Image (tube, rainbow, N blue to C red):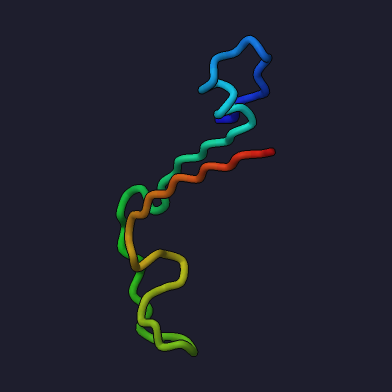
Length: 66
């Protein structure tokens, strides 16, 4: 979601939030465990790099342009 520029007649909070971008997301939304890798590869991780061992994670990004 991106908020655009506001005019001089806009309220103070619209001025404060003008040119602000907000992004909310989820990684591994189904909380799926990565597949087990019996060979372990070079790094001996024991889980596939195609999944995330931390399971589900959430993020919020806010950017303000000046």
